Amino acid sequence: MLPDIADRIAQIRTVPELRTFIREMLCAKENLISEQFPVNEAILRRGERTCGLQFQLFGPRSIRLGAIWAADHNVVYFYAANGERYLKVPLQHRISEELAVA
Image (cartoon, rainbow, N blue to C red; front, side):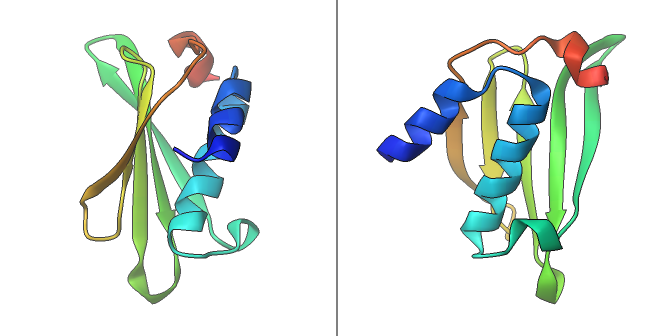
């Protein structure tokens, strides 16, 4: 992992910071300007408990990139337009699942 990415990961402590990081990483994958493309977000649940968040970025030319934050393991998985996982990022600080609902 690149040193600047490691520094960014160390700064993530809240869900809004996580959202920003994921948007920037998804846009960097396809060289997109992050302000120009929407990122949809869905809460993932296991029973009644929130277990993570799913993010989808819809870009030009029908590009769809994704990421999943697995709260149990505190890891973000990034997926390319072809659906293949290309990056696994363990977060250094635990983010509360309850915060994800807000």
